[in-house]
Each structure stands twice: as structure tokens, then as C-alpha cells.
Image 1 (cartoon, one colour):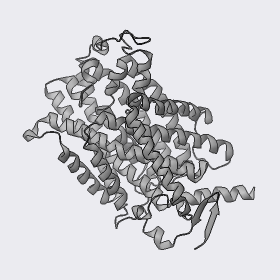
Image 2 (cartoon, rainbow, N blue to C red; image 1 turned 60 degrees about the horizontal axis):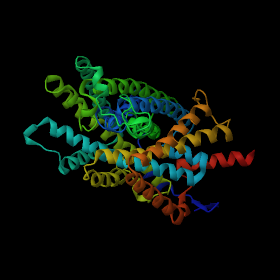
Image 3 (cartoon, rainbow, N blue to C red; image 1 turned 120 degrees about the vertical axis):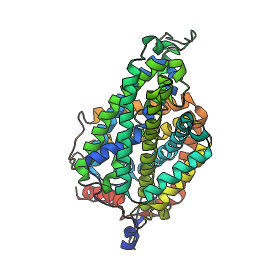
Image 4 (cartoon, one colour; image 1 turned 60 degrees about the vertical axis):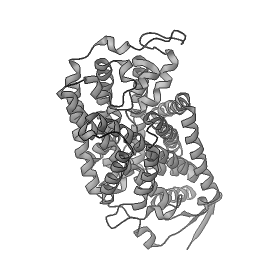
Length: 475
């Protein structure tokens, strides 16, 4: 095998058999399925999780945070659309950062994304438990066995292959969107402006008012929960290797998904709080159902809301498996994790994070797990936006079938807000964010001591970087 060494990084070429055992199914998705995947990643955030931000900032604080975060995500999505058109590979954000920031930056970004995607399904599992319990079927109560059942069932479907999984995700996501329409129609009749401001005002907080009961600081503290309206949409590029014409379809899919999510965010935030009251909704495990009270509409939304939670749970399992697959195939993490089965699904990349997520779900602390997932997400956004800016400056002539409107100014804005979001996770729960930081540091130590000496030079992500180096040497 040929070997290469650069700045303490050792690369070698693996055999064709190695790569053959680590192949995904190509050409399985078009832009519409990708848009469904993007909405599916996120839609559970409309049904539960975001409402804990009402406790931090009140309706006004969460609304302001949501506007800021929506603008950040729009800028982020436009930046990632450009990067995914130029570098279509299963690594997504890791691939982009690997090209721009080198192996250290690539692995740091991939690690942050893994933290997000491994923990987010655990948070969603606790919300699924709350919705199941509220249905009151056969005396079912929220518990560990519900979490185990959803993990086992949906990992099993993913093991059957990506074509089947994406189609199932699309159908479930469509049902979840119908549920939001049903909720909106029912909630309009119960809307009361007074409900938006029924949280007691903390007179000692700077800038406190009925709209900002915890003052200006509450806006900042609400940011991690506003992120839940859009968290994980950045996972769409992870499907690049399984997409037909990825340089065109991935940008179209992620931008279309963002458009849908902007509408659902406004609808859910305003109508849920206005119908159910900010105080009551701030601690609810199933806010849309409780906002409607008793009745047929509430029960319909409860059933369909369960579909919404399942859509995100199902979709994020796909995301974590592809991110882990890409890092493993390139040698950053143990290579056995990227071996695919006869249906071209990465078996251990699906199962191992699932086991970790299930164990985390046993805490039952959905709000805590949410904050931990947001830490990983926001950190990855910082690194991805830095990557976009670096590539714009260093490789201006790199082929880009899609170009971000506003260029580096657009992604620079997203970068600033993402930095504030990382800090906000420590403001909400410093212990949870601190543990995520420790896990992140442990991954980086693993890379420094072991895996940076064992990278696979002929993996797709490393070949992108090798091509860039060769072009630079020629110049």
C-alpha cells in the first residue's frame, strides 16, 4: 500500500475490496424526497421541545429568539446548498470542513454532528413516550420499553435499505404536516392574545415586561429551544451519495425543506401559545394536544403528533448512521463501523449510536437532552460556516453549481449567531453542555493519539482533499 504523511497525518490506500464493502446505494432520491427528509428531520420540533423555551424567555423572548434563529438557519442552509453542490459526499458537514480546514477541522465537525445526532433521537424518544401515555391506550404508560421498541423498530427498517427508508420517511412526514394543518384550524378558534403573556414577570430581571417576563437575558436563554424548530435540517447533504444528480437535487431539497419549516415554526409558536397559554405550555410534554384541551381535534392531533415525532426519530437515525459511516470509512473512527450489509445499509453505524441513544433516553429528561443535542449542532454550524468562508476565499474557482446569495456575508451572519447559540447552551444548563464538551474533547484525543495515523487516502472525502492539494501544487 502506498502511504503518505503530512503535518502529522498519515494516509494509506485501502484495497478495492475495502471500499466495495462500504458502498451505499446510489441514485435512490430526488429533490422531493430530500425535501421530505429535511422536513422529517425537524418536524418533531414543532410537536414538542420548543415550548420549554417559554419557561426561559416567555413568549416574547422565545419569539425574538425564533426570528434570529430562523434567519441563522436560512443563511446556514444557503451556505450548505453551495457546499453540497460542490462536494457531494456522504460526510455532509464533515466533508465540507475536511476540504476547508484539514483533517483536524473535518473530524471536529463530524464529531459535533455525531453528538447532535446521537442525542437528538433520545430526546425525541422521551417526547414519543409522553404522547403515547397521553393517548391512554390499553393503560400504556411512558417507560423504557417504549424507547426500546421505537429504536428497535426503526433501526430495523433502516437496515432494509435506503430506498425503502426514504419512502417511509416521506409518507410519515406528510402525515405529520397534515396534523399541523388540523391543529392550526382547531387552535384558531381558541386563540386569545392574553394567553401569550400569562407568565409571571420577574421584576428583578433587566428589561422585564409582560412580553419578556425574564428580561433581555431570557431571549438568549430561549435560543437553544428556538433551534429545536430547525435542528437537523443540515443533515440533508448526508444523502448526497444516495441521490440522483446530487449537485442539483441536494441544494433544491434543503432549500425547499427550509421554506416549509419557516411556515410551520410561525404557525406552531403563535397558535399553541395563544390557545393553551404560555405558562401551561412551558412545561408540557405534548403542547399541541394540551393547547386544544379535550375533544376530537385534540385526539386527532395527538395521534398524528406521534407520527411527527416518529418522522424525526426515524430521519435522524438515518443521519447519524451516514455521518458515522463517512467518518469510519475514512479511518477517523473504527473502520468496522462502515461495513454495509447486502442492502447497502451500514449495519453497525445504525446500531451502535442507537444503543447509546437508548441508554440516554432512560434519563427521561427531554429538555436536558435537547440542550445537549443543540450544543453539538451549534458547534458544527460554527465550523461549517467557517468552512464556507475559507473555501470562498481560498478556492474561488472551485466548481459551484449553486452559489450562496450574499456569499461570505450570508454565512458570516450565521457564524456569529451560531457562536452565541453555543454559549447559550451553557447558560441554560452548564452541566449538560459541559458533559458534551468533555465527550467532544475525548473524541479529539482519540484522533490525536490514534486515528490520525490511520486515515484512508482513497476514501471519497479524503480524495476531495487530495484533489484540492494537487491543484494547489500545480498552481
